[in-house]
Structure formats: C-alpha cells, structure tokens
Image 1: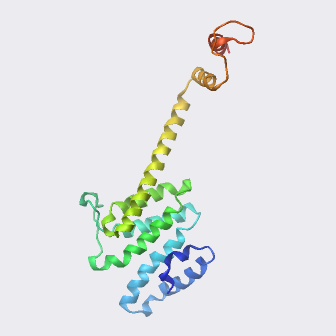
Image 2: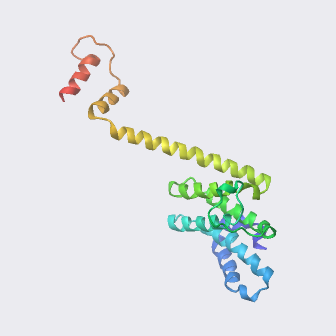
Image 3: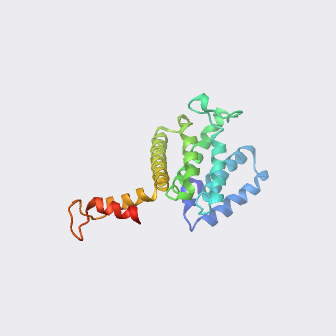
Length: 209
C-alpha cells in the first residue's frame, strides 16, 4: 500500500517509517515467492534509494545516483551508438515495472539540483535518462526534456563564470586598475584642474604607483 503514493517517502517525517518497513521486507525476501521478490527488488529502488536521494550528504547522494544510473543502463538507449560497452538489458517484459521507479528517483535527485554539490551527479543522471527516453511515457519524456534543458542551461552558466574568473586572474595589475577606473565615477574630461585630473592624468598616476 505504501507505494501507491511512492513520493510520500520523501517527506522528512515519514522517511524512517518507510525505510523500516521496506528494509524489513527486503531483508526477508526469501520468505516470499518469485513474483513478490521481483517486486521487492523494485521497492529497493523506488523507496529505499529514493529516500537516500533526499540526503544532504554528498557521498551518499552520489552513491545513490550511481545505483539509479546502473538500473537505467539496463534499458536500451534511444541511439544504439550510445550504449555502454557490455550493456545487458532487462527483458522487455520486465522493463515496465521499473520505469516509474526510475523516474521517481530521477525526480527526487533533480530536487537537489539547486545545490552546487549535487549538480554534477544530477547532470549525469538526467543525461542517462534522456539517452533512454523512449522507454518512458510521453508525459515523462516531456519532463525529462525540461530537466535536461535546465541542467544544460546551468552548466553553460557555470562554464561562462569559470571563464570570466580565469580571465580575471590573467589580468595584469595595470589592466585591473583600468578595469577599476571603468567602473568608477571619474570625469572623462582631459582638462586641467587640481581635482578633475582627467583620464590621462589618472592613468599616468597609476603607472607611477
């Protein structure tokens, strides 16, 4: 009954109860039949891993993301050329039971994308899901594309900021002074005057400093 609303396990006040219940079933799976054991295997991902993705621990989060990617790699890629070497896919008849579990985990991980420490892991996870998008329903594919666009947009912003930081480090002291001047409220007149100074005078003073 708990997986009828599987995202409820993310609620902070319910995580301990969900973990206790589904971990108990997982540890005693030998008591169940083959069909029930297969479902418990799905629960491990859909409940236990999803809860672990709600952490603020970088290492736990990255480890949980790797588990989701490992399951994603058991689904075929949209383009066969993107398949990892030695990929072994789930039988087609078994894939359906995993799709919603995987999607819920990607959704839980994406909620952490706002944190800098989580972005690299989330980027990899969303990329892996988008590469296998044909396995998901049409509405899920739309959401995957939205997540992918958000990840790419933020990655471009990070790269641009890194490039700006690198250029700033490469500036000479003279260039840094000139940059300060460009943002300062200094008269643009080259006329004399004790206080005005003008651009030429100001730059000349910087050379003398």
